[in-house]
Length: 315
Image 1 (cartoon, rainbow, N blue to C red):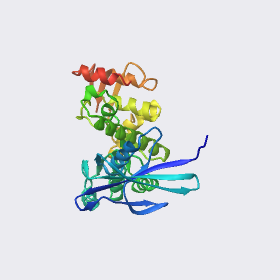
Image 2 (image 1 turned 60 degrees about the vertical axis):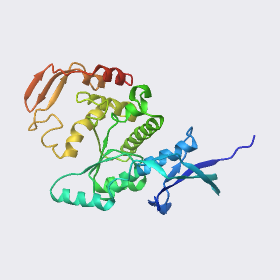
Image 3 (image 1 turned 90 degrees about the vertical axis):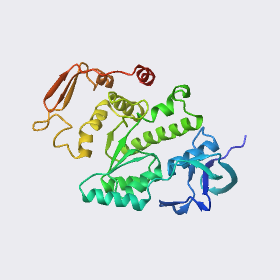
Image 4 (image 1 turned 180 degrees about the horizontal axis):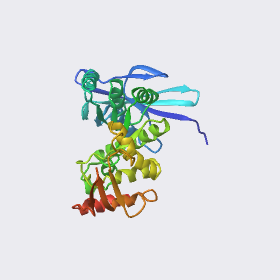
């Protein structure tokens, strides 16, 4: 049996009329303008890898990508193969131009405001951080340049697994999502998880959000985001609570008022029957809510039972 080491990658040429989409890469080992692309993951089909890479790096969803060539050459580790794709049909759009992002950030900072960017692609993360955004909501796979930008900008990552989970993991008969939509949902979900893990490894501060108002997200289920953060990213219960409280207050610049129980701060807290440090599901059953000293015992919500049943499958 003959075997050899092979590295599989892709590049994708996206054409819109007489325009071609290029990226200006800033990696030390590969700089300059090129087409979006990357490595094929284990167990992933060649076509799916191309769709995923373009989604991660540009935010665009390619439709009917066409294989137009295969290039191979030798590297120290073995054979390096690049599958070349072309596409003229896609959905989504590249968001704000870099100069517009910078103008918004400059004006907001001049007025004393912080800027948050909802980003689900690696290229979007880079553009946002290069032009002054203070926090990245959602996130995507990071490279060394982006990690350095996070640190230079003292930027935060806001991890939001709640809105991505239904499209990624629910049965499509529940969400009515197409196969492509579910695939793209999984790309976003996996990208958020990977981004959070990279942030942890590189001491980038993380807070938690849940995009309330999105499908399957309720105003009373924020505790689920803490649970998902613990389950999928692998943090302790205590760290999940910290990211949702004191760390979040620091990002908002109000940690001198709230975020922890300390003398001189607002009396903002919840009371649970069981200890969430032992099990985050304790946060589901709140005995009392205290906000700035005002106490509400046994608060109730109108529960959407279908949402509860479907989401509980992932606890």
